Image (cartoon, rainbow, N blue to C red; front, top):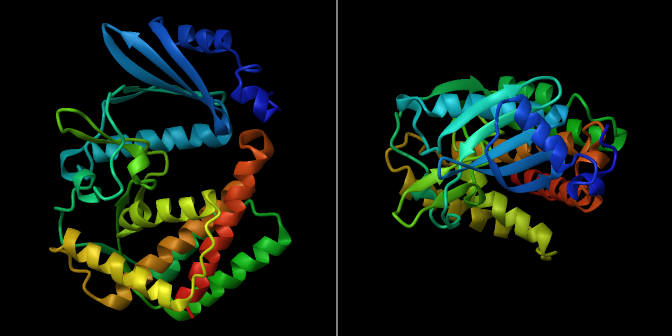
Length: 319
């Protein structure tokens, strides 16, 4: 059992020899160029095969294995022509079992996409017709997914309270739904010298999510990340929130000019449900079993603060 986060990250517990053993079990004997150890007990192995580079992802924890299996579903879903929302690199699942998951993706040399290049990585040309779901039903779906492991009574009560307030305001609404990357930010994109654009890292894919989830995540996720990372002091009053909504709505109309989402209240509702799901996600993640083995204490504190910041946004938005 890997019981020390820092030792794992440094490759002292699960070693290069252990990695090589798993690769040989799966008949992979290509040249290993580099091995990097990451949080949630993930290992990335860069290999060289027939003069072409690949990136192998080895997941060793129950949670990361589940994410890897979900990523396979995402690649399979979006690789279908009629679902080609993104341009994806070549992907292959090699093996998955109770002990590990091993996958392979082509290594693409390039630079990370820019925050202001959303429309270069997201195909907005898709049908105007959306399936819908009652908001209350969708909230129950994500409650079932994210709220089952929260054993901190204080945070659990806080979560239940905000969900109740949220539903008391919006429960009768129907919301448009569709497939979602789940972690669509410029951090998960690449652009090459020959102007090709790629999107990767589909671990948080969902076939059913509120429309605009990926749009909001691209624009809001990095803002919140930098507020937390750099300790930016910002008073999120109603005026600032109103200005942000206006900006996001303006950008939305430019990107999705053929969309049927023209109702301002529906736009704000989709923003609110995005924030609510992100809040649930952070609460779920910080209460994972053996979380102290999976992420650093600094990252755990960061996630708690992120959850609290998002909660403050939701509270102001649904007043």
